[in-house]
Length: 250
Image (cartoon, rainbow, N blue to C red):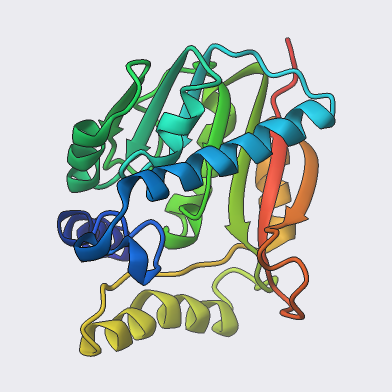
């Protein structure tokens, strides 16, 4: 089983057992002590902050179709539906999507399983807004890079994509350090989690220069790169970064 298939398997199990905790790994989001309103309100608060930033920075985003990539149980999908006409949440896990459909809170959002290593299930120029939070970090390469490329295929001209990717060192492809990092993240860390009785969720990084190259090669226009607020003041060298990028109008 390759690393991408292992990611799918991990989230099928996570989605069946602890779908809320899989999204926000705090004890209060485990099923036996869950307050669903509290959980979904975190999505509302996050989207409200991001939409206010969009407004404050003078970006005009059409309010037609939006995509929540890596939607889980729909925490952000439902929140996005307050700002857009139609919102689709997509996830690799059918158990997550099953829960999302049961928990749906707004009529103008829908959910879709996508087990492909790309976004070919969607049409070119389909979405005015694409958002992804704490998802790409759990996807191995090259699939993670495929998804980022496809963001700009399915993003409509004039549309905006905001997505979170943990930064990492620049490693020459197929070099010994690159192979070691890949082995450690795809094999060693998940094994360590398994023997401790935890879910075998992978955590990956993509260097900022690499992400910026992918955006440029995909026809996107990079607008901003900024640290996740939770990590912005920490001394850690590599931090999760939000990328803001648009697709130039035709």
